[in-house]
Each structure stands twice: as structure tokens, then as C-alpha cells.
Amino acid sequence: MASRISEVVLGCRNPELLARFWCEVLDFVVLDREDDGTVEIGPREGFGGPQPTIILSRRDEPEKGKSRLHIDVNATDRDQAAELERLLKLGARPAEIGQTGEEQWQVLADPEGNEFCLLKTRLDPL
Image (cartoon, rainbow, N blue to C red; front, side):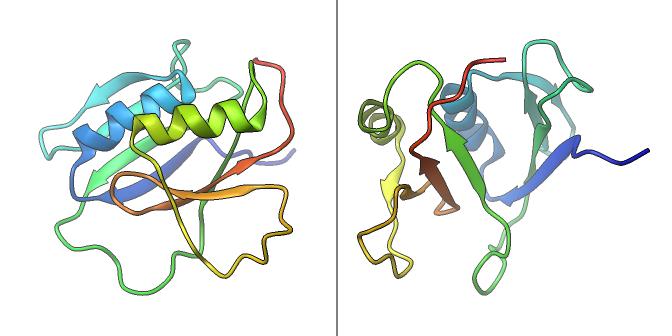
């Protein structure tokens, strides 16, 4: 038997802001809110399904240095260019991390500057 990822935890200054952003990006919903400001978002089916949930944990100060982990997303109902346009309208912005310009993915940052990549391949929705 093996393990699988059930949750991804992202430290942030404004969990509510990022919850709205990532819910729009991923078509997720808010699953839980804690008294300390933590917000858990995930697929409509809830925790334990094939997709991990994202826990947005309040942190007053961003962690120093480059993040060793980032999220990759794939469009499910449009091509990469159309999805890029949608993500930019939601508040994502281009991020420069030393790309060559030859990559098949787009590097973006969410409203708090957390880097993520929009991959070229379109996936079937679950």
C-alpha cells in the first residue's frame, strides 16, 4: 500500500482572499473555516476524494527564500492561452523565475505572490 496527497498547506497573509482566488481557479468550494483564520478549500465532494484539498493557513510574515514547492494547474475546458487570460483576470500575474522563453508552461503568481505554473496539456475534468 502507498500514501497519496490528501492536503496541501499554503501559508498566507490573507486566507480569505486566496480562498476566493483558488476556488475560482480550481472550481473548488470552501469546506471549512477555523477560528484562527485558516480556510480549507477543495472539490465539492469534500475531503478524501481523488483531488487534495488546500489549507490556507494564516501567517503574518511570508517565509524567507524561494519556495521549494509550487502548484501546477492544467486547463480542463479550454486551451492554455484562454486559461491564461482567465487566470490573469482573476488576479494572477506573470512571474519571472529565470525562464528561457522555450517552456511549454506559464509561470504565474497568485495574489500574494505564491508561484504556480499553468501547464500546456489540457486534462479531462474529474
